[in-house]
Image (cartoon, rainbow, N blue to C red; front, side, top):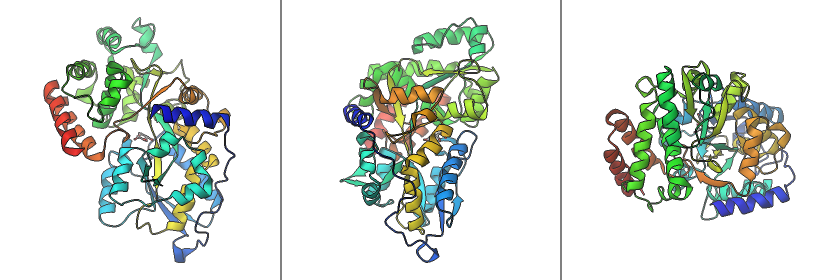
Amino acid sequence: MRRTFRRVLVLGVAAAVAAVPACSSSSDDSGGAADGGSKIEVFSWWTGPGEEDGLNAMIADFKAKNSGIEFINAAVSGGAGSNAKAILAGRLQAGDPPDSYQRHAGLELQDDIKASKVQDITYLYEQQGWKDVFPQGLVDKLTIDGKIYSVPVNIHRSNLLYSNPKVLSEAGIGAPPKTWTEFLGQAETLKSAGRIAISIGPVWTQKHLLENVLLGELGADRYERLWDGRLSWTSSEVLAALETYKKVLSYSDISAASADWQPALDKLIDGAAAYNVMGDWADAYLSGTKKLTLKQGYDVVASPGTDGVYNFLSDTFTLPVGAKNKAAAEKWLVECGSKAGQDAFNPKKGSIPARKDADRSLYKGYLAGALTEWQKPSTRIVGSLAHGVVANNAWNAEIDTALGLFARDGDVAKFAASVQKSWEATK
Ligand code: GAL
């Protein structure tokens, strides 16, 4: 993946493709109630602070360009789609799909393609010139048999360590840790100072932390081998990384875990906790919603052991089979893939655009660095577990169950054996 992404990024930077207006015509210009062009229902999980601002910005741009279409925002609360995905599954099962729904690029989407839940939208890519504006490595994750099935709106980074600088300095800690071993040393100091070293939330946030401890401890090469069976979860090196994860968790507030990622960050903001590992949607929450200043109110660096690595995920929107308002859904997808839509959405969402021709001046603070890092030829790109890139839905669900048990019994060998067994069963 790394080489493909890089090659395409280089080409993209060298010859940024001209913007395609979001209001360009789609394959169906007829619109109107008769063919389902008068309204659209869009399903996502962006309801919370720091998330819905981005979505609302893109909806506003869509409405300005499609004034005749009623927009139904069917977002369901719960970070990482923790509630939305189950509700969506029920609707798809019942043959009642929304007109467009959010899915992560990678194996999460590939499940839907294989199950014929989403329509081929290669024609939109051709009409809108998208094949030239998105990184090829990303488009590959939306493609089966040469047909493309969704439109990416962004690139998020999973491997970030947030901190409260005041808490660190009061504890005599000069800088965030570069390795998990260093983190554990700091955690002991923080514990003695009466602080939670690292705040945590529900199971998906524990999985988010797990992937980044594994990445930091194993390195990018071995991390990638975890997802295709080349590295056994029961090998001594993975067991050692899982022991580190267990130690990290022992310095967390898992016994009083927060209900979602925002309240887990609130503990960092109010000084109860020093650190939190979360994706860059947290930067939008801290700098946008909470109006904190980077470096003073909070800091963000690559999670321990992952400097130079971009653990990526991408939110995309689909055209479900059986969408009742197909013409309007195509217009929404055009919005999602447009430069204007992406540049409205991403600065507020805390992500960088999937398109290569973004207006860089709009990406400030943390996001300016993220854009540079993503486009740097030396950056190593790997995919997120918790956000659908590297594991299919069945395996991800098994890992959730095993992780729930692990949080209670702390049995590393049992957890590893169970994840390995479920890989065999679900591959
Ligand atoms: C991810 C999603 C992000 C953000 C996050 C927290 O799965 O890709 O856009 O919404 O969950 O809810």
